[in-house]
Image 1 (cartoon, one colour):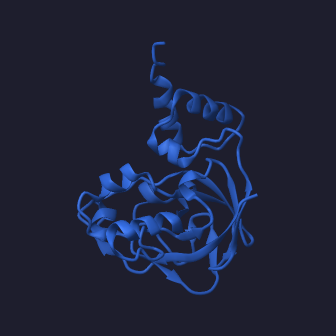
Image 2 (cartoon, one colour; image 1 turned 60 degrees about the vertical axis):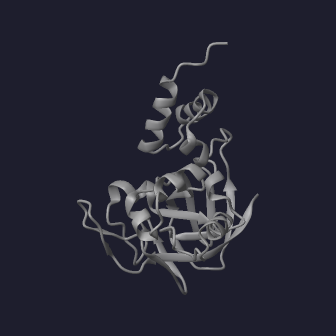
Image 3 (cartoon, rainbow, N blue to C red; image 1 turned 60 degrees about the horizontal axis):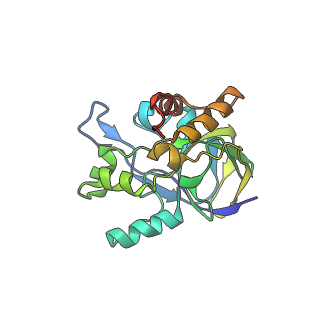
Length: 217
């Protein structure tokens, strides 16, 4: 059983203007003190400006690992403090990008389920002010994971993050983001057939992977 720690709980600090149809982005997340309530759509006091891309029950929370943040701090020459990736949860000792789709985390009284990887967008790039950021962030593959809320409650910085269960298919959010191999697709499909609650986005990737012909021996 893997155990890490919740370093920070982050929610929107201010809505920033964008050039897209939504008009604003809630990517400016900052760490907050004290307990925060978790409900089916995320954190009390937080919002997602576009739930089509960043919210809803299957993307209620976004988690990012401190190890990946440390990598980017070194690469960019600045401290990537909690919330700087637009994340709700900054975790340590837990590899969010390498979490298995469907694995469950317990944080205090809250239970969360790993659903799918985060896809970087232009608003993320504009917020950080880094050139070619979307491509750079994606190619590095340190993308973190979205989570659904299985059981709500309160969480706060300092809580233990315990991986309570991990599906046997072993396919991670990072592997899904990079593109599934036929063998990985088969394992994930078997899990789906057995009742796994895959998100629509995951099912799309799975369908595309199954359409790719196997290489000729």
